Length: 406
Ligand SMILES: Cc1ncc(COP(=O)(O)O)c(C=O)c1O
Image (cartoon, rainbow, N blue to C red; front, side, top):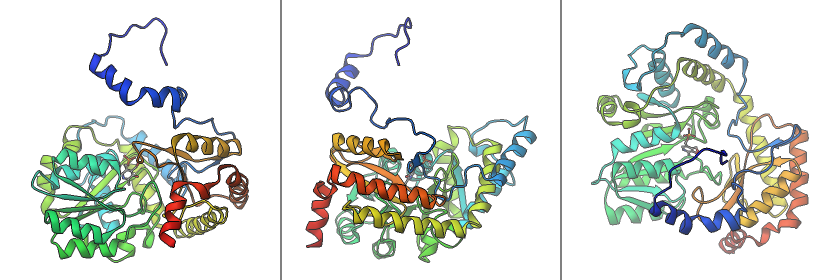
Protein backbone atom coordinates (compact mmCIF):
# COMPACT_ATOMS: atom_id res chain seq x y z
CA UNK A 1 0.00 0.00 0.00
CA UNK A 2 1.34 3.44 -0.90
CA UNK A 3 1.07 5.86 2.01
CA UNK A 4 -0.02 9.24 0.65
CA UNK A 5 2.48 12.01 1.35
CA UNK A 6 5.47 9.79 2.19
CA UNK A 7 8.28 10.31 -0.31
CA UNK A 8 10.75 7.50 -1.04
CA UNK A 9 14.04 7.90 -2.96
CA UNK A 10 14.03 6.40 -6.47
CA UNK A 11 15.08 2.77 -6.99
CA UNK A 12 18.15 2.03 -9.11
CA UNK A 13 17.56 1.61 -12.82
CA UNK A 14 18.97 -1.93 -12.58
CA UNK A 15 16.35 -2.93 -10.01
CA UNK A 16 13.55 -1.26 -11.96
CA UNK A 17 14.65 -3.10 -15.08
CA UNK A 18 14.57 -6.43 -13.26
CA UNK A 19 11.08 -5.81 -11.97
CA UNK A 20 10.01 -4.80 -15.46
CA UNK A 21 11.39 -7.91 -17.18
CA UNK A 22 10.85 -10.53 -14.47
CA UNK A 23 7.65 -9.50 -12.76
CA UNK A 24 5.58 -6.74 -14.36
CA UNK A 25 3.56 -8.91 -16.71
CA UNK A 26 2.89 -11.48 -14.03
CA UNK A 27 1.81 -8.81 -11.55
CA UNK A 28 -0.30 -6.71 -13.86
CA UNK A 29 -1.75 -9.13 -16.41
CA UNK A 30 -1.73 -12.57 -14.82
CA UNK A 31 -2.50 -11.55 -11.24
CA UNK A 32 -4.44 -8.35 -11.95
CA UNK A 33 -2.34 -6.43 -9.36
CA UNK A 34 -3.54 -8.60 -6.50
CA UNK A 35 -1.02 -10.72 -4.64
CA UNK A 36 -1.41 -14.28 -5.83
CA UNK A 37 -1.65 -15.91 -2.42
CA UNK A 38 -4.39 -13.54 -1.24
CA UNK A 39 -7.89 -14.81 -1.88
CA UNK A 40 -10.87 -13.70 0.16
CA UNK A 41 -10.99 -13.70 3.96
CA UNK A 42 -12.47 -16.96 5.28
CA UNK A 43 -15.89 -16.62 6.95
CA UNK A 44 -16.86 -18.24 10.26
CA UNK A 45 -17.99 -21.51 8.62
CA UNK A 46 -14.99 -21.85 6.32
CA UNK A 47 -13.15 -25.16 6.25
CA UNK A 48 -9.51 -24.13 6.67
CA UNK A 49 -7.15 -26.46 4.83
CA UNK A 50 -4.31 -23.96 4.69
CA UNK A 51 -2.46 -24.54 7.97
CA UNK A 52 0.17 -27.03 9.11
CA UNK A 53 -1.07 -27.63 12.64
CA UNK A 54 -1.68 -31.26 11.73
CA UNK A 55 -2.53 -32.45 15.24
CA UNK A 56 -4.49 -29.28 16.11
CA UNK A 57 -2.38 -28.43 19.15
CA UNK A 58 -2.86 -24.65 18.90
CA UNK A 59 -4.46 -23.30 22.06
CA UNK A 60 -3.95 -26.55 24.01
CA UNK A 61 -4.35 -25.64 27.67
CA UNK A 62 -0.97 -27.12 28.73
CA UNK A 63 0.86 -25.16 26.04
CA UNK A 64 -0.85 -21.87 26.78
CA UNK A 65 -0.27 -22.31 30.53
CA UNK A 66 3.42 -23.05 30.00
CA UNK A 67 3.78 -19.91 27.89
CA UNK A 68 1.95 -17.75 30.43
CA UNK A 69 4.03 -19.08 33.32
CA UNK A 70 7.23 -18.37 31.41
CA UNK A 71 6.12 -14.86 30.46
CA UNK A 72 5.44 -14.10 34.13
CA UNK A 73 8.66 -15.66 35.36
CA UNK A 74 11.08 -14.14 32.88
CA UNK A 75 10.59 -10.39 33.09
CA UNK A 76 14.31 -9.72 33.07
CA UNK A 77 15.35 -12.11 30.36
CA UNK A 78 18.27 -10.98 28.20
CA UNK A 79 17.84 -11.56 24.48
CA UNK A 80 21.07 -12.91 23.00
CA UNK A 81 22.30 -15.15 20.21
CA UNK A 82 21.74 -18.88 20.67
CA UNK A 83 25.46 -19.53 21.22
CA UNK A 84 25.26 -17.80 24.61
CA UNK A 85 22.70 -20.26 25.97
CA UNK A 86 24.41 -22.15 28.80
CA UNK A 87 24.25 -25.88 29.37
CA UNK A 88 21.33 -26.56 31.69
CA UNK A 89 19.31 -23.58 30.40
CA UNK A 90 15.69 -24.23 29.34
CA UNK A 91 16.90 -24.02 25.73
CA UNK A 92 19.56 -26.68 26.14
CA UNK A 93 17.15 -28.90 28.12
CA UNK A 94 14.61 -28.62 25.32
CA UNK A 95 17.31 -29.37 22.74
CA UNK A 96 18.18 -32.54 24.64
CA UNK A 97 14.49 -33.50 24.79
CA UNK A 98 14.11 -32.98 21.03
CA UNK A 99 17.25 -34.99 20.30
CA UNK A 100 15.98 -37.78 22.55
CA UNK A 101 12.59 -37.66 20.84
CA UNK A 102 14.03 -38.27 17.37
CA UNK A 103 16.72 -40.62 18.70
CA UNK A 104 19.87 -38.56 18.10
CA UNK A 105 22.80 -37.47 20.29
CA UNK A 106 22.15 -33.75 20.21
CA UNK A 107 20.10 -30.99 18.64
CA UNK A 108 20.44 -27.27 18.06
CA UNK A 109 17.33 -25.14 18.28
CA UNK A 110 16.98 -22.48 15.58
CA UNK A 111 14.65 -19.57 14.93
CA UNK A 112 12.86 -21.46 12.15
CA UNK A 113 13.03 -24.56 9.99
CA UNK A 114 14.50 -22.34 7.29
CA UNK A 115 17.43 -21.23 9.44
CA UNK A 116 17.89 -24.79 10.72
CA UNK A 117 18.47 -26.02 7.18
CA UNK A 118 20.57 -23.03 6.25
CA UNK A 119 22.68 -23.09 9.40
CA UNK A 120 23.38 -26.81 9.24
CA UNK A 121 24.16 -27.21 5.55
CA UNK A 122 26.30 -24.09 5.56
CA UNK A 123 28.59 -25.98 7.96
CA UNK A 124 28.47 -29.60 6.78
CA UNK A 125 29.04 -28.86 3.07
CA UNK A 126 31.60 -26.76 1.25
CA UNK A 127 32.89 -26.11 -2.26
CA UNK A 128 34.48 -29.59 -2.35
CA UNK A 129 31.28 -31.40 -1.25
CA UNK A 130 28.85 -32.37 -4.00
CA UNK A 131 25.33 -32.10 -2.62
CA UNK A 132 22.53 -34.24 -4.07
CA UNK A 133 19.06 -32.86 -3.53
CA UNK A 134 15.73 -34.32 -4.53
CA UNK A 135 14.35 -31.94 -7.14
CA UNK A 136 11.38 -31.17 -4.85
CA UNK A 137 13.51 -30.56 -1.73
CA UNK A 138 12.42 -27.50 0.23
CA UNK A 139 13.87 -24.12 -0.81
CA UNK A 140 15.64 -23.65 2.54
CA UNK A 141 17.73 -26.76 1.77
CA UNK A 142 18.81 -25.31 -1.59
CA UNK A 143 19.62 -22.03 0.11
CA UNK A 144 21.78 -23.89 2.62
CA UNK A 145 23.74 -25.41 -0.25
CA UNK A 146 24.11 -21.95 -1.77
CA UNK A 147 25.35 -20.54 1.55
CA UNK A 148 27.89 -23.38 1.74
CA UNK A 149 29.06 -22.52 -1.77
CA UNK A 150 28.72 -26.23 -2.54
CA UNK A 151 27.92 -27.71 -5.97
CA UNK A 152 24.21 -28.67 -6.02
CA UNK A 153 23.04 -31.65 -8.09
CA UNK A 154 19.29 -32.21 -8.39
CA UNK A 155 18.16 -35.79 -8.80
CA UNK A 156 14.76 -36.80 -10.13
CA UNK A 157 12.05 -36.66 -7.50
CA UNK A 158 11.89 -39.84 -5.41
CA UNK A 159 14.21 -41.66 -7.82
CA UNK A 160 17.03 -43.44 -5.91
CA UNK A 161 18.37 -44.98 -9.14
CA UNK A 162 18.88 -41.52 -10.61
CA UNK A 163 20.49 -40.40 -7.35
CA UNK A 164 22.91 -43.29 -7.66
CA UNK A 165 23.87 -42.35 -11.21
CA UNK A 166 24.49 -38.76 -10.13
CA UNK A 167 26.73 -39.86 -7.27
CA UNK A 168 28.66 -42.17 -9.59
CA UNK A 169 29.28 -39.17 -11.84
CA UNK A 170 30.18 -36.54 -9.23
CA UNK A 171 31.51 -38.51 -6.25
CA UNK A 172 30.61 -38.95 -2.59
CA UNK A 173 29.07 -36.02 -0.76
CA UNK A 174 25.84 -35.12 1.01
CA UNK A 175 22.38 -36.45 0.09
CA UNK A 176 19.38 -34.31 1.03
CA UNK A 177 15.72 -35.36 1.03
CA UNK A 178 12.45 -34.37 2.66
CA UNK A 179 10.65 -37.18 4.48
CA UNK A 180 7.27 -35.92 3.22
CA UNK A 181 7.35 -33.41 0.37
CA UNK A 182 5.79 -30.12 1.31
CA UNK A 183 4.13 -29.35 -2.01
CA UNK A 184 2.78 -32.78 -2.92
CA UNK A 185 2.47 -34.88 0.23
CA UNK A 186 4.66 -37.57 -1.38
CA UNK A 187 6.55 -39.87 0.96
CA UNK A 188 10.28 -40.26 0.38
CA UNK A 189 11.46 -43.82 -0.42
CA UNK A 190 13.84 -43.37 2.49
CA UNK A 191 15.09 -46.91 2.82
CA UNK A 192 16.32 -47.00 -0.78
CA UNK A 193 17.79 -43.49 -0.55
CA UNK A 194 19.71 -44.46 2.60
CA UNK A 195 20.98 -47.61 0.89
CA UNK A 196 22.30 -45.60 -2.06
CA UNK A 197 23.90 -43.02 0.25
CA UNK A 198 25.60 -45.76 2.30
CA UNK A 199 26.78 -47.67 -0.76
CA UNK A 200 28.55 -44.53 -1.99
CA UNK A 201 29.89 -43.24 1.29
CA UNK A 202 27.65 -40.18 1.43
CA UNK A 203 26.24 -38.41 4.45
CA UNK A 204 22.48 -38.04 4.47
CA UNK A 205 20.22 -35.28 5.78
CA UNK A 206 16.45 -35.79 6.14
CA UNK A 207 14.13 -32.81 6.58
CA UNK A 208 11.32 -34.20 8.75
CA UNK A 209 9.24 -31.01 8.86
CA UNK A 210 6.09 -32.77 7.64
CA UNK A 211 6.55 -36.06 9.49
CA UNK A 212 7.70 -34.95 12.93
CA UNK A 213 4.68 -35.31 15.19
CA UNK A 214 2.59 -37.05 12.56
CA UNK A 215 4.63 -40.15 11.78
CA UNK A 216 6.39 -42.74 13.90
CA UNK A 217 5.79 -43.91 17.47
CA UNK A 218 4.82 -40.91 19.63
CA UNK A 219 5.35 -38.73 16.56
CA UNK A 220 9.11 -39.35 16.47
CA UNK A 221 9.17 -39.00 12.69
CA UNK A 222 9.60 -41.09 9.57
CA UNK A 223 13.21 -42.14 10.26
CA UNK A 224 12.05 -43.58 13.59
CA UNK A 225 9.03 -45.24 11.99
CA UNK A 226 11.26 -47.00 9.46
CA UNK A 227 14.01 -47.82 11.96
CA UNK A 228 16.52 -45.73 9.98
CA UNK A 229 17.50 -43.10 12.56
CA UNK A 230 20.92 -44.58 13.28
CA UNK A 231 21.73 -44.67 9.55
CA UNK A 232 20.84 -41.03 8.92
CA UNK A 233 23.47 -38.40 9.75
CA UNK A 234 21.25 -35.37 10.26
CA UNK A 235 17.57 -34.76 10.88
CA UNK A 236 16.14 -31.26 10.56
CA UNK A 237 12.60 -30.02 11.11
CA UNK A 238 10.48 -26.94 11.27
CA UNK A 239 8.54 -26.64 14.53
CA UNK A 240 5.94 -24.56 12.70
CA UNK A 241 4.07 -27.63 11.43
CA UNK A 242 2.80 -30.26 13.91
CA UNK A 243 4.35 -28.24 16.76
CA UNK A 244 2.54 -25.08 15.59
CA UNK A 245 5.34 -22.85 16.95
CA UNK A 246 7.95 -20.51 15.53
CA UNK A 247 11.20 -22.48 15.51
CA UNK A 248 13.17 -25.28 13.93
CA UNK A 249 16.04 -27.56 14.84
CA UNK A 250 18.67 -29.87 13.48
CA UNK A 251 20.36 -32.84 15.05
CA UNK A 252 24.06 -33.49 15.17
CA UNK A 253 26.49 -35.92 16.73
CA UNK A 254 28.20 -34.67 19.91
CA UNK A 255 31.56 -34.47 18.16
CA UNK A 256 30.20 -31.83 15.79
CA UNK A 257 28.62 -29.44 18.33
CA UNK A 258 31.59 -27.15 19.15
CA UNK A 259 32.58 -26.78 15.48
CA UNK A 260 29.00 -26.12 14.49
CA UNK A 261 28.43 -23.51 17.16
CA UNK A 262 31.46 -21.67 15.92
CA UNK A 263 30.49 -21.76 12.24
CA UNK A 264 26.71 -21.84 11.89
CA UNK A 265 25.77 -18.23 11.22
CA UNK A 266 22.06 -18.17 12.21
CA UNK A 267 23.01 -19.21 15.76
CA UNK A 268 25.76 -16.62 15.97
CA UNK A 269 24.40 -13.62 14.10
CA UNK A 270 20.73 -13.80 15.01
CA UNK A 271 18.93 -13.86 18.36
CA UNK A 272 17.63 -16.95 20.09
CA UNK A 273 14.06 -17.86 20.92
CA UNK A 274 12.34 -16.25 23.91
CA UNK A 275 11.67 -18.16 27.16
CA UNK A 276 7.91 -18.38 26.64
CA UNK A 277 8.50 -19.82 23.17
CA UNK A 278 10.83 -22.48 24.59
CA UNK A 279 8.37 -23.25 27.40
CA UNK A 280 5.50 -23.53 24.91
CA UNK A 281 7.48 -25.80 22.62
CA UNK A 282 8.61 -28.03 25.50
CA UNK A 283 4.96 -28.41 26.55
CA UNK A 284 4.02 -29.07 22.93
CA UNK A 285 6.52 -31.92 22.75
CA UNK A 286 4.73 -33.62 25.64
CA UNK A 287 1.34 -33.04 23.99
CA UNK A 288 2.64 -34.41 20.68
CA UNK A 289 3.97 -37.57 22.34
CA UNK A 290 0.53 -38.28 23.84
CA UNK A 291 -1.33 -37.62 20.56
CA UNK A 292 -1.67 -41.16 19.21
CA UNK A 293 -5.40 -40.75 18.72
CA UNK A 294 -4.91 -37.47 16.81
CA UNK A 295 -2.28 -39.15 14.60
CA UNK A 296 -4.67 -42.01 13.84
CA UNK A 297 -7.49 -39.55 13.12
CA UNK A 298 -5.23 -37.52 10.82
CA UNK A 299 -4.48 -40.68 8.88
CA UNK A 300 -8.19 -41.54 8.61
CA UNK A 301 -8.97 -37.99 7.44
CA UNK A 302 -6.17 -38.23 4.91
CA UNK A 303 -7.45 -41.51 3.50
CA UNK A 304 -11.02 -40.25 3.32
CA UNK A 305 -10.32 -36.96 1.58
CA UNK A 306 -7.67 -38.40 -0.73
CA UNK A 307 -10.23 -41.00 -1.82
CA UNK A 308 -12.88 -38.31 -2.34
CA UNK A 309 -10.66 -36.13 -4.53
CA UNK A 310 -9.42 -39.15 -6.44
CA UNK A 311 -13.00 -40.37 -7.07
CA UNK A 312 -13.85 -36.95 -8.54
CA UNK A 313 -10.97 -37.24 -11.01
CA UNK A 314 -8.41 -35.00 -9.30
CA UNK A 315 -4.90 -36.28 -10.15
CA UNK A 316 -3.44 -36.44 -6.65
CA UNK A 317 -1.67 -39.77 -6.86
CA UNK A 318 1.84 -38.30 -6.70
CA UNK A 319 1.24 -37.90 -2.95
CA UNK A 320 -0.07 -40.11 -0.16
CA UNK A 321 0.18 -38.11 3.07
CA UNK A 322 -1.73 -35.28 4.79
CA UNK A 323 -0.84 -32.69 2.13
CA UNK A 324 -3.01 -32.85 -1.00
CA UNK A 325 -1.97 -30.82 -4.02
CA UNK A 326 -4.48 -29.87 -6.68
CA UNK A 327 -2.00 -29.04 -9.42
CA UNK A 328 -3.94 -27.06 -11.99
CA UNK A 329 -0.61 -26.10 -13.63
CA UNK A 330 -1.02 -22.61 -15.09
CA UNK A 331 -1.34 -19.79 -12.58
CA UNK A 332 -4.58 -18.49 -14.11
CA UNK A 333 -6.17 -21.96 -13.81
CA UNK A 334 -4.91 -22.28 -10.25
CA UNK A 335 -6.40 -18.94 -9.24
CA UNK A 336 -9.71 -19.92 -10.85
CA UNK A 337 -9.68 -23.18 -8.87
CA UNK A 338 -8.82 -21.34 -5.64
CA UNK A 339 -11.71 -18.93 -6.20
CA UNK A 340 -14.19 -21.73 -6.87
CA UNK A 341 -13.14 -23.53 -3.70
CA UNK A 342 -13.24 -20.35 -1.63
CA UNK A 343 -16.68 -19.39 -2.95
CA UNK A 344 -17.83 -22.72 -1.54
CA UNK A 345 -16.10 -22.23 1.81
CA UNK A 346 -13.01 -24.41 1.31
CA UNK A 347 -9.71 -22.61 1.90
CA UNK A 348 -6.41 -24.03 0.70
CA UNK A 349 -3.19 -22.20 -0.18
CA UNK A 350 -1.98 -21.15 -3.63
CA UNK A 351 1.55 -22.37 -4.35
CA UNK A 352 3.28 -21.11 -7.48
CA UNK A 353 6.79 -20.08 -8.58
CA UNK A 354 9.15 -19.84 -6.76
CA UNK A 355 7.51 -22.45 -4.49
CA UNK A 356 6.81 -24.67 -7.53
CA UNK A 357 8.20 -24.67 -11.04
CA UNK A 358 6.57 -22.14 -13.36
CA UNK A 359 3.80 -24.23 -14.93
CA UNK A 360 3.10 -26.44 -11.95
CA UNK A 361 1.08 -24.08 -9.76
CA UNK A 362 -1.35 -25.66 -7.32
CA UNK A 363 -3.86 -25.17 -4.58
CA UNK A 364 -2.41 -27.03 -1.60
CA UNK A 365 -4.76 -28.52 0.96
CA UNK A 366 -3.35 -29.52 4.34
CA UNK A 367 -5.44 -31.71 6.61
CA UNK A 368 -5.62 -31.87 10.36
CA UNK A 369 -6.82 -34.22 13.06
CA UNK A 370 -9.84 -32.21 14.21
CA UNK A 371 -11.69 -31.84 10.94
CA UNK A 372 -15.25 -32.83 11.77
CA UNK A 373 -17.34 -35.31 9.85
CA UNK A 374 -19.53 -32.42 8.68
CA UNK A 375 -16.51 -30.46 7.46
CA UNK A 376 -15.16 -33.41 5.54
CA UNK A 377 -18.57 -34.12 4.00
CA UNK A 378 -18.65 -30.48 2.94
CA UNK A 379 -15.20 -30.76 1.32
CA UNK A 380 -16.32 -33.95 -0.45
CA UNK A 381 -19.39 -32.16 -1.80
CA UNK A 382 -17.29 -29.22 -2.98
CA UNK A 383 -14.86 -31.58 -4.73
CA UNK A 384 -17.81 -33.15 -6.60
CA UNK A 385 -19.21 -29.75 -7.53
CA UNK A 386 -15.95 -28.17 -8.64
CA UNK A 387 -14.54 -31.11 -10.62
CA UNK A 388 -16.78 -30.70 -13.71
CA UNK A 389 -16.05 -26.95 -13.66
CA UNK A 390 -12.25 -27.24 -13.66
CA UNK A 391 -11.91 -30.64 -15.40
CA UNK A 392 -8.89 -31.86 -13.43
CA UNK A 393 -8.57 -34.93 -15.68
CA UNK A 394 -7.38 -32.52 -18.41
CA UNK A 395 -4.56 -31.01 -16.30
CA UNK A 396 -1.01 -31.72 -17.50
CA UNK A 397 -0.26 -33.72 -14.36
CA UNK A 398 -3.27 -35.97 -15.04
CA UNK A 399 -1.93 -36.70 -18.51
CA UNK A 400 1.49 -37.46 -17.05
CA UNK A 401 0.00 -39.78 -14.42
CA UNK A 402 -2.04 -41.61 -17.09
CA UNK A 403 1.07 -41.89 -19.26
CA UNK A 404 2.99 -43.47 -16.39
CA UNK A 405 0.17 -45.88 -15.56
CA UNK A 406 -0.11 -47.15 -19.17
C1 LIG B 1 10.12 -29.19 4.28
C2 LIG B 1 10.26 -27.85 4.94
N1 LIG B 1 11.44 -27.51 5.48
C3 LIG B 1 11.62 -26.32 6.07
C4 LIG B 1 10.60 -25.40 6.14
C5 LIG B 1 10.84 -24.05 6.77
O1 LIG B 1 10.20 -24.03 8.01
P1 LIG B 1 9.88 -22.68 8.78
O2 LIG B 1 8.55 -22.21 8.31
O3 LIG B 1 9.88 -23.06 10.22
O4 LIG B 1 10.98 -21.71 8.47
C6 LIG B 1 9.34 -25.71 5.61
C7 LIG B 1 8.23 -24.75 5.67
O5 LIG B 1 7.81 -24.19 4.70
C8 LIG B 1 9.17 -26.97 4.97
O6 LIG B 1 8.00 -27.29 4.42
